Image 1 (cartoon, rainbow, N blue to C red):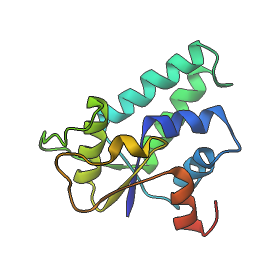
Image 2: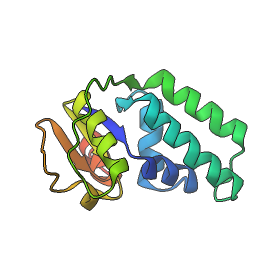
Image 3: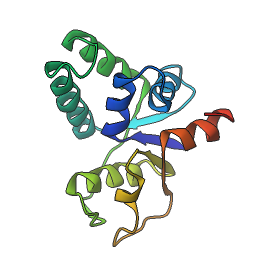
Image 4: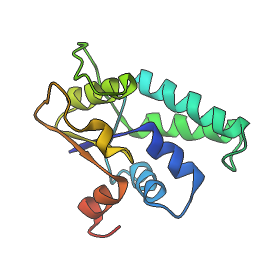
Length: 143
């Protein structure tokens, strides 16, 4: 199983060092949770995290965020999305995350917004949706 981290999970990991998102991201960096990335997803992480730095929502500098993203790329598996099938989720941005997860299947989308990924018009086998807490319990036995 590989894991696609929704942008809200990465953002949450930087907001709080005590939450499930931060613990999960640490496990990704330790190589204990295989993460998946795609250049468009990385660009979204970059945009959102830099906006958070600019608005002082996190205690990190742009350089620190840049290093974090560079480190993420070194540990994540690259997914190659070779098609543009849309599962027609309510948020168009979520469609792409679902496509990355399908390209990397079997995989799990890790998000705080589980309901946003429920009941797409097209459901693909091998794609699950879970919260960071659920994934922590799955991979380590506790949250």
